[in-house]
Image (cartoon, rainbow, N blue to C red):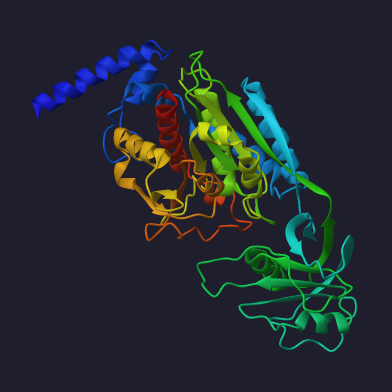
Length: 453
């Protein structure tokens, strides 16, 4: 035991001396040797881990997340929210002296709604088969699941929401004089809340029909329980939309040698009604914080960050990017670390999952597993296991090593927090600084190890 302790002290002293040569003062480097927050074992860092672990700060990343989630809010592909986020992300990366390229691509129209109650405004979906670009203001009538409707709904806005709604209740409400219909979905599982949506109607109607998130239904019914409620319901058809990828690059520091590219990526859009703090504001700000920390470190490979637009509508941004790569460009990519939902505060999400499309190990999952062992996080990390559903998929399909990294429930990588894709995906309700810090350290150390090869 004493011999082991002497070896640990010697290794730490050698690493601290080396860390000083790359700009870390002894106090900062010494702090990196302490047991990491949330780790079960003391670290055994290698030389390249020090400048990452000693510098990354989840609280710095949180400053960016406050802009994206609190200030901008929902970032629906091609709409104002996503465009504002794109401008903010590109500016941060340019200020860090990266070579930034904004890659536009066309996307489909969006049908969104808004519900205003006094000073509160909630984003919803709206039905393409309902009236668009209109606003209706009226008293709300709660019609339950729509099985029974009042004979006269003239001038009213009708709320219909339950686990199983009557399919044609919206049409009956329109025929009886309603000026708008609010459709809500209530999950059969009480632990799983449902998101806002754009309802598909079997029969078109000439009034706006909005699709509310479950929590929006609950909040509206809480108000209705206290008395009469008047709302403004708006439906907007967003046309001729363009989404954007933001690509930021810094070349290898050793000239005359092309050893490839390492990518660290995330998507910055969100679903209707959701400010997307964890999904995927957390992955986005992980990229921005690692861009700050890694920008001047020596590497044998090019460092490339990519923030994808329009992920939530079918991985559109990452698919567009990969489709534009020539075969030689694709072959240069040594690995793509995709970060999606890396900071949830949901208690059961105690496992950091390494997800590859086929469940096989590759350069990215192996690098994160190795980093977890060095940093003492190994017991919290599982995988690789098979799972798609994020922006690592187009890279895998092109033969590029890629993985998706995410905090999920212990029972399996499909076990997501109840606030997933809802208005409650906020910093306050769904972000853990500790888990964000672990994610930063794991991806930063793993990516830097691959950059040095």
